[in-house]
Figure: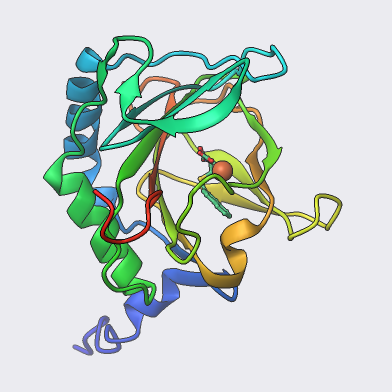
Length: 224
Ligand code: MD3
Ligand code: FE
């Protein structure tokens, strides 16, 4: 019988979509790691729980979030910023699990960015109705480094715009295990997430929740 997978050298390529120069989706890259990632999220939220940030303009965000690594993301009336201490606990953010760092490093290398060493991992939590309006990520001092994102749980619709806010947007479904790498030209593109729909979860017994991890290099190389 002919081997159905005789051409499997080319199979991984089918799962790598280039959205624009510098931006890549690695479909299913972290699918096998989902259970381990859920466990790590459980551990780190025991230390630094999910919270709804209030924007500098006074709006409570529908997505709740936390962070791990040397730096985490916060917001108050003074603005958005990365800090070494979780303002909720007054303690350093939980350390980034080694497994998380290796996942991000390997995904970045797969997309052509070798030597990625994230110092921050932001964890977003979406429930039905939670979304993220169109924005740019431009608070990282080291813009030469990519951002790596990992999607888990419920499927969401990702909005991918251009470098100008009013540029046309493309929509992409993101399912559990999908990993995206954003570097080069794509690093400053506007992007967002449509409010999560209340649908049947793709896996039995799964909660109606979506998690997204984003790995970032905030400080230039050499700065601990
Ligand atoms: C494109 N998170 O945390 S991840 C964010 O699904 C954020 O939770 C979304 O946007 C989420 O800031 C989208 C994909 C992503 C992350 C960073 C990017 C796309 C990006 C930076 C530049 C361009
Ligand atoms: Fe973003």
